[in-house]
Every structure is written in C-alpha cells, then in structure tokens.
Length: 456
Image 1 (cartoon, rainbow, N blue to C red):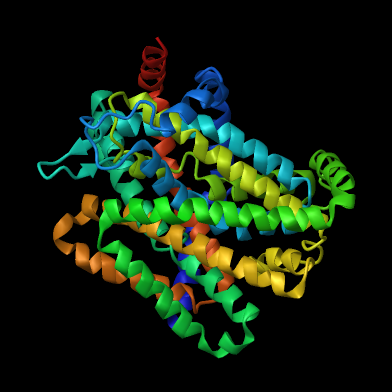
Image 2: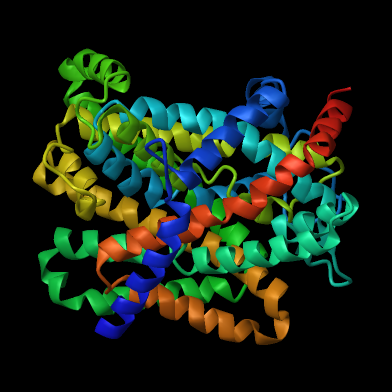
C-alpha cells in the first residue's frame, strides 16, 4: 500500500508542475477555466439568463417526442449529469474552500457557478451536434466526438485526434480519481467517524460501496439514468432540508454572516494567501463542484432524446446553477456555525459534519446519510464517463476489465490517505478542460450559430 501511495504522489508532482503553474498568483488551470467562463458568457450574449426559463420548460417534458433519437429523456439526462456533477465537491469541496479561502470564498464560488452556465451550454451544444448513434441505438457523444470531428471540420484532423486522445486519458483518470476514489474516501470517512463501532471496518465499508457501484455499472447509461432519477431528487431535497435546519438554528446570525461573506469577498483577510489566494481557491473548488468546461457532463447529455441540439444545451444550463445554490447553502452553513474556523483541507467532509453537530450531536447522522447518497450517485455517474472514455481508447471488447478496474479504484479510495486523493482528483478532472476548452474556442462560431438558429 505504501508503494501505491508513493506512486500517486509521484503522479501528482508531475501533473501539478504544469497544471498548477503559478501565473500572477493563480494556478494556470484555474485561470484557464475562469477566462473561458467569462468569454462564453459574453460571446453567447448572456445565455445563462436568456434560456433559463426555456430550460425549465424542456425539463418538464413539454417538448418531449418519442420519435427523437437517443436513449434517455431530457430529465433523465439532466439527472444523470447532476448525479455526477453535484456530489461531494458541493459539500466537502466547498467546506474546504471556506476553510482555506475564508467566508468571502462563497461569493466567488457562486459567481463562478453562474458564469460556468455559459461554458456548460457551449460544450453540450457541440456534444449534441457531433454525437454518434450505432446500429444498436447506443449513443457515443461528448468531447471524444466533437474534439476529433469538430477539429477535422476546421481543417485540423491530426490535432483533433491528438486532443481527443489527451481528453480521453484525463477523463478515464478523472473517473478513477475524483469520480470514485474521492467519493468513496469521504463516504467511508464520515461513516467511520459518525458511527464509532465501524471505525475498524473501513475496508468492509469500502468493499460494500464498490459492490453497490458494480451492480449499477453493468447496466450502463439506462440503468444509471433510472437510479439517478430515483436518488438525485432525494439527495438534493434531503441535503437542502438538513442544511436549512442548520442555518435556521442559527438564524439570529444570518445577517451578520451574509455581511461577513460580502465584505470578506473583497478583502480576503481570512484567506490563506490573501485576496488572490481566496479567488484562486474559490474558482478551483467551484470548478470541481459544477464541472463547467471540463467536458464531463456533455457525455451524459449526449444520450438524450432530442430534435434540436440546443434544446439539450439549454437543459445543461441548470447544472451549474443547482451546484451554485447547493454550494451557497453549504458555505453559509459552515460559516454561520463557525465550523470552518481552525479547519484544514485534511478535514474535508468533517467540516460540514461539525456544522451539523451544532444543531444536535445526533444530527451528524443525517449528514452521513446525505454524504453516502451523494458519493454513490456521483460515482455511478462518473462510471459512465469513464466507460465512454475506455471505449474510445480501447473499444468495448475490454469493457469488463474497465468495470473491474473502476470498482477496484473505488475500493482503494476508501482506504487511502485523503490528502493525496484530493490532489490527484483535482489534477485529473481539471486537466480535462485543457483539450476541451481549446476546441470550444475553435468551434465558437458553430456554437453561437446553433444558438441563434434555435432562438429564431
């Protein structure tokens, strides 16, 4: 196990030297995502706001047609994407962001989520334009398709093949890192610390978690969509209710807390590294929470039954918005209770647990349940992303080997040291944005053309 730990540390060191290269106080990869979010918000004329109402109507099923090509409905595609997007990054990740960046980080995390809506719209538009459906009706979409074929349309076929290969490597690595290891690690951690009788049985919990994932994994996107349809609303509603109870129990401190968040957002006094450090950690944690620009969600949305590509892209706008709202509530909760004070990145989800315990000692049990559901739904969502990446690289013949590797990584995540898991997860998942956003810029005119055509 020590050798495995050292191997992960070596990989983290190599990747961080490039992706987290310091540029004016900002890690390169964070700046890369921030600039893209601002660019597409402006270039697409505030699509974040203009198509929001339309997105709600589409999700409601108003425009569903049985004859449209695809595997799942608009709602199922959204919930499948949300099952992967809104995970422990919205609880543990945001809690870490406040602990390191101070209360002001919450403001910037929410802003990053709202701006990220435009990036998500752009990548899902391309995903729907370039998706491929085989003779059995199985959909292959996402950056794998639009990077290769989109760049070929631009006269850069070789560059397209190289970038799609790089994306697939990062996506597969992200699925085996942040997509499952981070999730199982935090689920096992909170279960063993909440229920002391389980403290010596971390490996049993981790094995059980991996087994539950394997059961769903065998059914691919259709089974994932059905499970997501059942548990995503449950996890969202349950967590929101619990977090509201925590905030409600401290309601007398609400206005001072909001004032603290706003004033600290423009001073960064409580942040490690000051104002610049706060902005950097805010956008880093926001990117991990909403995944806008990473190219992950377009894989799930590609399976939707659609007639017009932009209709599904409009639906995708809702993901970063929901992630931003959950991040806001998480940040507010850990700030209003003071749970972030003295905490570090190593504490992870236990920061939120401390906030829950402020209501009553037994209330932390509710968070443990929430975390398990969040972790499970995120893991099964990312299992599909990894599956599509595997198929792109190796074909479907070795898919059972992928299932075995994915579940083994899920198990290992539950018993390895958290610090290295967090670093590796960030690097692999954020690295997906490199080839993805390059192609979004190249194909920006196609994206805007599709949007304008849809609106008229």
